[in-house]
Length: 521
Ligand SMILES: Nc1nc2c(c(=O)[nH]1)N[C@H]1C(S)=C(S)[C@@H](COP(=O)(O)O)O[C@H]1N2
Ligand SMILES: [Mo]
Image (cartoon, rainbow, N blue to C red):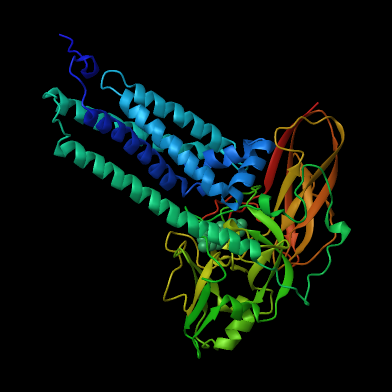
């Protein structure tokens, strides 16, 4: 038998029942916003439904309306917008609650429509990607679940009978209270962390890149072969590969940053950021490479760095002669072990604060990271570095060494083909083949190419910049029709030829010759 739904009962509805329904809806939208705020954190505070709708509204406001808002509210135009939005959302929540029935979930549909607005607004944010829809979707799902739960509970209570003296019972009040508390806690946590992130963004914007006397040698035009489709000699920051274990990119400020130096040293020391920049900076071009890079892979990048020589600081603290490892720790607990020897052998190992003329991007270690020419990133390039311990390789293993990777890892001599692109169609005749080779801190002596396992032929090298950076190469191929295989190998200035045997990246970097096959028409 189908029971009548409550709203069709011929009982005069006491105002309290309406209020209880409206409250359910308001609590549900609070859950949407609170949960949305929290879920937005790991993605971007910009992706929270409330913020995204507000920001997109601002972006979409016609000029006359903006003038009106600024004229009316002055610099309070943003709070006015948020208050206006809040009032609207509370009203919509109340309507959703009043219309929600266990059997006719109209209120849930209203929340769903609100969710579509949030998703749309989030996707309009300037740097939005597909992840931006997640906070709204998760928030709305939690809100709908809350609404269903509260209305269900109310209807159970109402089914017991309703008259002028009706009051919601304990269960309903408890459920509503818990939901509201969860929403408030989630929202507050989101806001708190979001504020810190905003603070870090402002701190980075105010950061002044140090002026340097000891500048990098100018990059000769001949270092850049300028072949379309090949990497550029300097890698723009936004194209620079990013590898780390950080789920949430640390958001440090120069005010909160400190480097504690301890362990096997004569004088322990803690440096503030002001202490660091009081020292003398250098500017250098250095190519970084990740040990996980497969033969032919893209986990390498070249940038101009400004930073403070690590050697100077190690001299200041007085490293004990039997300490052979610098164990550096990131603010998120990630650790790196670097041989002390390479840090004091005269190469340009530095605590970098700027990358290609900008403060370090957050993803690349703002405000301070290590850059050490010649070693793979996992044994040298600690981002968000806040602690140095002088110790010994026979006493500690750093993060990746504990997980099966090597303890010592100089970068292997490598080269790759970049042009023509893999699987691209190639016409017979003169075909320009180009790519990049590297052997940081040893330097590239030559690059050779061969076709179909034939004779190795010398490629033309771009002008050398330094032994710490990669070197571009090109080679003109007289391509005959058919299927052909190209291979490349580099030789470094120590005479080491790139190793032919194919081995995987673990434990100390991949080896093998990069090979690409083309069907020539
Ligand atoms: N804090 C921290 N620093 C880190 C890592 C990390 O996981 N956490 N990864 C390292 C590795 S494996 C590499 S290859 C380089 C990559 O630096 P990039 O992301 O700036 O290119 O950072 C190194 N520094
Ligand atoms: Mo790496």
